Image (cartoon, rainbow, N blue to C red; front, side, top):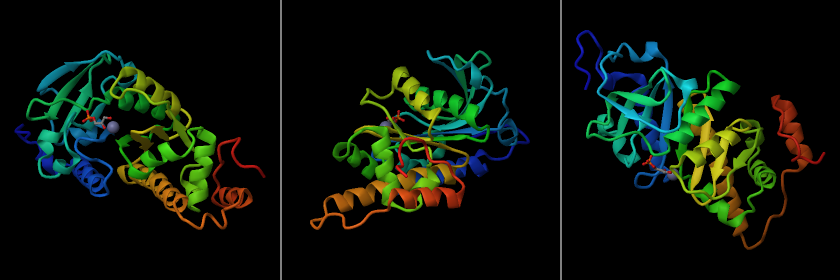
Length: 279
Ligand code: 13P
Ligand code: ZN
């Protein structure tokens, strides 16, 4: 808890509440069993300073994937090994506010991780993805990773070609092509929590805001918590429809055609990633 004179109570900060709500909601829909999933939220200095003294550093943690582009940036992130279910009842233990140092080689913990914890083990994927998303859009402040159930299931039952996976998702719900016209990126199966999976995730993130880790989960990037949650939710819903209809005895009787998908894109003013629709 921040005890600096003249500062507002940290637990009243809107960004802390957004983290509490998002983690609880994701746990509630079953995407974050045990400690599964992690969130990082880029904060503006003026959002943080009403609650924290930026000179009051609790701990400094070094890391081995320099992120010079994020020097002096503030984030609130979920802790490694922490359960999304528990964030709401104990945010100070399960979350942390951190600032990258000015060489991009360490983080200062300014609040949270009160039991001596540290940021998510997927920090390389989060930080490196933030860098590439900020290059695309300076308003992209959220990276969410979770174990969305039906996306994960679909990585067993559907081929892992990005174009065909994207097309199947688009075909499952009318809104999909509008919500993620850039489609999904898919990595090969990799060991999580490494710098390498972080680099590969970020490479995909330069082209799309959704990156699937087969048999593991999904990464989403966006402007706000709601919008990024909604992005993953939309892909997950499509994957759920796919799973339902795949096991339907009677098979699929009709589909959304490529022409209809193209009409949707035109009507909503989005440009679908090339090489998928045949019209
Ligand atoms: P953390 O508990 O370190 O965030 O890891 C959870 C996870 O989902 C790993 O991919
Ligand atoms: Zn995971």
